[in-house]
Length: 634
Image 1: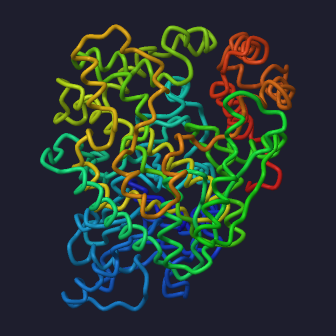
Image 2 (image 1 turned 180 degrees about the vertical axis):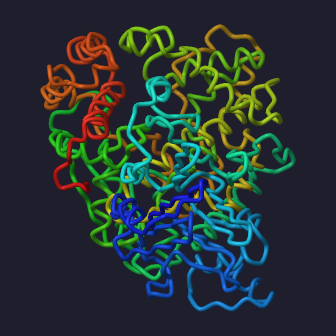
Image 3 (image 1 turned 120 degrees about the vertical axis):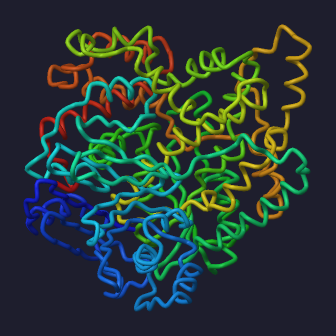
């Protein structure tokens, strides 16, 4: 919806409009429809608006409450704002706009900061309380919308994107080597650190304030996932029917907008189900698919193009369907822009996200997305069956950590980094960060297979899913497009957590029996399993074609394993094995060369690691060396 930024000077120095304007210009792509500023002594807020609800000037931010106590800048969308607005009207509040922003700021005036816990939607916001002389930051419970902060003891900066800090005199870019260690372990950050030294990601479901006397950042974590209390008496039919009802309700809620709304449409069940319901609300719904030139692609990647299945569903739901076909050369053009906008490098081969959001932004301002169904309903059975026979917590951690070292395992990372970097790193830190995700929640148990699967769902909802959200936010907002996620409706999430895992995984009872029988072949190739999201599949049978329901799961990814060996091999070498390669100040070029040679010549699939090497090279060029990106934002 928007981009936000701000400054709070704890030393009492005034904030000036010019410094806010420079910060806002860095994130202008997030809100091309207008700017707004608030300055009062040591506090300043900036807002870049992407107008979605009440596109008149009545929706401009920063917005002040009627009692003149609260000032708000807000990025996101609240889907229950109309119900909350009526409640506030009953308490005497008057509203002049049709925005969710006004509901939030009046809710703060009526109930205080705890009002944020009642919001059903995605948000990242900052609020200034004039009576308390206090700044609050807060994020939605699932971590859909990003919010970063930087604090040097005197200046407290916040923004939707880190690049805004680069426009402020108190901030200079330095690499956080501990964050690099974490990234090259998980292709993600499970902690709140980033690649930028001193920059912290505000955790999901978290509200912070600054103690002006002690200069302490005080966190309040107000919500967490809970898969540990399933309704053991829930029947499969009850789970299916209630999922069906809540899903339709969630899609309907997220259609609210005063601008065109569309939907991504891959060949899968999740986006197909969303499109099925959304097309009942919008005649001739616009849908968008990204396909790939498969002329030089071999092996399992030959099935990565989902256009045929997407076209099938587009025809069934009578949507206005748009497709973009990507080829191997597109990575060279897009990668610098992708890295510039991502800045906080995360998981996946994400340049197709950039292309499809760019396509959608030519026709709509809001696009519905299917992310979240896998994490809530058990869409990755090969991951769960890897660990569900663990005997105790220690074995569970060992087995699961082994899987989640997506890039470079512990035993190889001393070879990955240069000696000067390795000397300053704690190589055990990623394992400690991994375990800390689980230990944050003391209700988790580790005594039986169901517990291990519940814990896997918890972990992936807390780590993998926010990584997907961050990539989606940065690359869609780069194109002035808001993505929404119907699976992340509060009511639907609350119910999904209550569904027993036996309803989510169709083969669970059979696999548990094999463990009980102590059979020798229980550790099979885990990708044989395709029984995930069982109850969700049955719930969606009323909406989408049967051949889509029964389709094997496939992620949204370009065929880069083949392209890195073929058409893009020269680009990979040019970027990573060149005298001009600058990331080798931190990463050992001999190790990079070994990985590239194994991929190209020995047919060992290192596509994720090669992608990450290329991302980090461009990160160094852009953020450390100040290289400008053509046709991008400075």
